[in-house]
Image 1 (cartoon, rainbow, N blue to C red):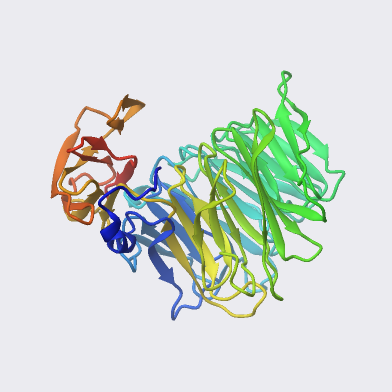
Image 2 (spheres, rainbow, N blue to C red):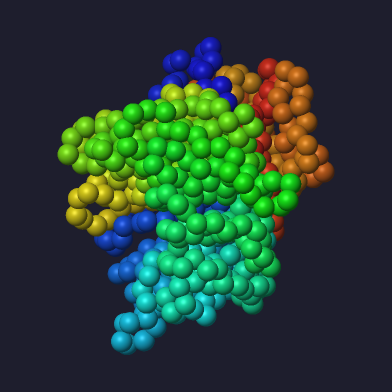
Length: 523
């Protein structure tokens, strides 16, 4: 999106920054742990960037889902209680529907020697469809428990390391029932380090310190298996369609590509390209399998990181940047998240002593300059970027990761300017504030439709229409004021569970907004 301030808006910059409709890196809301003491280690942003989920424990054991459209401070749309001390929390969300999953473990008995693993499937708009499932494998307290959900929410895959067999037990579930669709066991020979599902739900990568395997989902058929002959870190990933996978080593990443025989072969070993000992500690593919982003820690000092974007078609690096800090605290990569088409990616880190390195930075694939830089009070621990790259959810500690202390917060930020917004949780039969950004003096509308076009329609000079024509309505917002905003009210239909798509439009000149909001109507 073009973030240039257009003619006539200069006098209203301060107001637009406060509304979040213009500013890059605008905080939309923050949910701190004040009085509850939790430090979040996991977060997911799903359903078109409209819902944020996190899970906490072991002393304050809750799962909370928030609306991406709520005002600050947000009120949970849904909250569940784990019921007892819970550990090893992890959450994931579908991109194209209101569906999230969580995993955690609790003590199995009074001896405290084994743990029981619990999986939740959650929908805010259709709570009657929610379910829980207990994984049949008991653990000895290992943190090797994971759950992943496909982009469309059709497949949920959970893995638990079985300490009695040295294998990873995998369960495949559908969205509508806790009855497993399939189950199989992966010979990892030890506790696994990576458990990654392709975005389309067709391939699962499982890797330990010595083995890497790729299995077809849901059947569990093994497609690839090999030993890892070099030291590995925390960087493993598989592309959106399963056509590529990669893992990080020292000073390089090993990239594999599916060949004509249906298995994989080594495709390339992109290098870090600068001197020193660099551990590739995070990597992430875009869902469209066009881009691989890698992030390294400089293990000589732990005062520098390096991030690189790799074009998978040409194996070129359209972006590479080294980020260095200062002081006694370590600056380490914490998480990485990439947009659907690879045009944006977000890097989370611990920050440095001097406060010169923002804990979250969002980059464009073809530029070393940050699109947005987000400075937090403490270390970022986990992030999730929306599929369109316009929003990022962050879980952070209240202090630096090297420092003792509890507490933290969940934040939602806009990474770039937004043409359209609603303010308030979209509950059936209520009204929320709707507003658009436009040219002062223009007539503003919010376009609302129950469908998206299979192929967006481009109008030269007007913009791109994402909304389907059937059922499309215009919500009048009045005249765009001198601050560049038109504001009105949108009455939410009384159809819980249904979805509406919103796009800004204004006249004089006629212009479609570049944003398309996904709004699932809540009970």
